[in-house]
Length: 287
Image 1: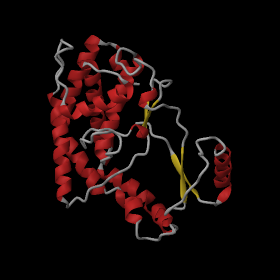
Image 2 (image 1 turned 90 degrees about the vertical axis):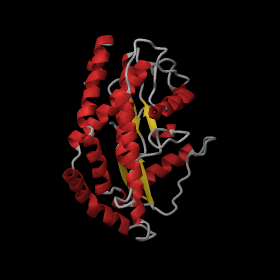
Image 3 (image 1 turned 45 degrees about the vertical axis):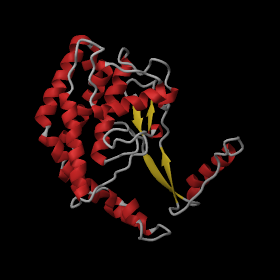
Image 4 (image 1 turned 90 degrees about the horizontal axis):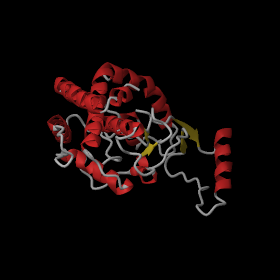
């Protein structure tokens, strides 16, 4: 899943910071007053890679539709993003597993000019759950409910007979409110295919040893960063690497592995459907 790169710029230190401040001062001349830099607890600016994209309500009419190449890819990659959000318990994007009434359309962007990467995740945040907490049991139970609904989805030959898994309905309602776009069996199937593909990718590439190696690689750097915070150590558990609890992440992967065979079978079923109805599906999926 494409996500923008970030780097840290210390407040009022170094030429890069002062270039940013000068740019924002120029922008502050317009009516939006974009030139204010405020630092509260953390004397750092997080500078994000520039991404060309638009929010859902700015999408051109009929673009987010499986009848066109870009639409297929967008729904498929959106599904992979949902799988990633399940892994990291990112509740602040889609009204999906967390059954919120509203999503946050500021945390993803569509890129109509990019058929290869039609959607980008913004502002990813891991919300780990203590492995010994009953909350983790509840979260894993929710994930199992999601997987069960995905596996129960079936295509019909009648667009008017469409049973959308409850867990998926919120996503489409959210998109419809922002874009006015309706959906049919193809959109639903493509999104579900993307979720399943995302889960299978996570199973294939994320192992406990991999997570531990990444964690240890950045642990020293993160600790040094926390030491420089003006508020000291009292909130480093909130901002630091401890947010990424390895045991929590691994428990999600283990649950995914439990359903790997069934998910693979469902993926083949969905792929076969689109191969029979839209030969471009396999080509799009492999891009």
